Length: 151
Image (tube, rainbow, N blue to C red; front, side, top):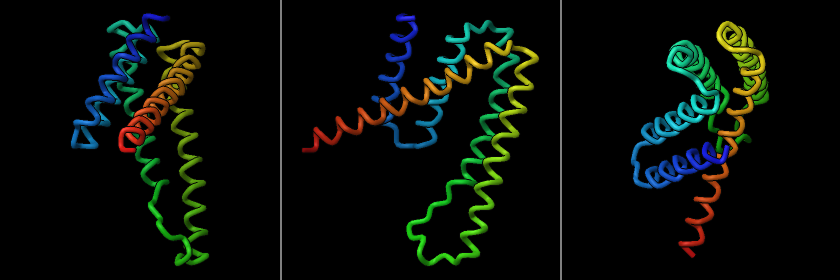
C-alpha cells in the first residue's frame, strides 16, 4: 500500500508542478484524468482485458456526469435581479440534475456488475472519493503555498 501511495503522490506532485506551467485548462483536466485512470487501474489491479471492458463504461458515465455538472453550475454573480419564477425554474433544474445523476450512477453500477463484483464496485466508489479528496488537498496546499510566497 505504501508503494501505491508513493506512486500516487509522485504523480500528484508532477501534475501540480506541470499545472503551474500549463496554459490550457483542458490540458490540466486531461492530466488529472490520466492520473485518475492510472490510480484506479492500479488500485483495482486491472489487467488489460478488464481495462478494455471497464474504461469505455466508466468514461461514458464520466461524460454524462460532466454534462450534468455543467447544467447544474450556472454562474450567478448576483441573485437579486432574478425573478421568483426564474428561481423556481432553477430549483426544478437542480432537482432534475440530481435525479438524472442518480439514474446514470444506477446504470453505471448495473453495467459494471457484468464485469466486476459488488465488492469491487464499492471499492471503486471509495477510490473515486479518495482520489478527489487527495486532489482537493493538493490544490489547497498548493494555493496556501502560493499565498505564503506572495506575502
